[in-house]
Image (cartoon, rainbow, N blue to C red; front, side, top):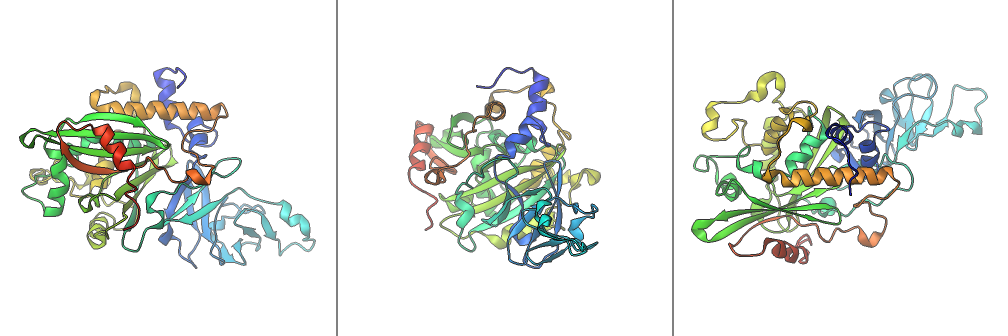
Length: 428
């Protein structure tokens, strides 16, 4: 149960993630993606990165391991992102000091008195894992938790597509959007008579009933959100199940929807600082290959540089008012762009104190309460839900994403529980 805070305290607690902040300490207790693996191939240059208001340098050593270390050499503070990747670490170009992936100084070649005390010098470092097409880091204290076995981690070739998007706003605005099913009927709206069949099939699900009934259920990893849309002409309803993954992840149907059960699009909204974040999106289907070329074509049209949208506040997101005859927002057909524009349009840090939440925001409100409770539990020294220590619990058995048509009288909660028992993410 979250401790009672006034509106301003809640807002500031949830949205500030820098070092020493309560939300920052919580997010650092979970593995967070830093970059897509292919952005750091063997032999590549070190990458300056900023994550949760900390400037770091990411590099892949010549033995293949990945390090995330302080960008300043312990000798004279030269930027290590210009360093040489060699001898199992990163070597400063000024005087040749060598640092391992754990931040420990390995060599001081310009010191005539260099001896074993070299190893007593170290700079800040965070452990990394290269898994599932992403490089993950753990920035918390104490024993490392296990990386949960998310379905996409061991995808077969052609069954996973990963992209990322830079976003000019607080991370929580991205998470809010992911647990808000009703916006799909508007922000992502399409004139189904004027778009291709694949997009028509995806959107028909949301166009028939624009005010879905929502149910929120606690899970081992966060929350399950059930959105029911009635189709009275067919005496049926569409059920869409999405998830919030503590503390800054989510999962819903995306480009893989039309392939049937066994798919999900998983997101992480990772703070760069309090007014910018990186949205990682992993499209996955266990049993059928994805339309990789089609997805990549959409991404490339919107990202001249990987991760950097061509639509920005400076060019008014290239919104096309005439296109609103085909798309609701006039922002093209890439759903991530729609989300980014809407969340950035809330401002750098959306002020919760001026909002007016309604019934369709029940999942947003519940997620914020659960997140606040997790932050407060963490501050008391308790282990938040979703942190995995036992290998037997690495698979979230209650994790499930789908969109299905049901009889209008079907019990949506019971149906979702039954689907969760079917191991729909086993590879076909």
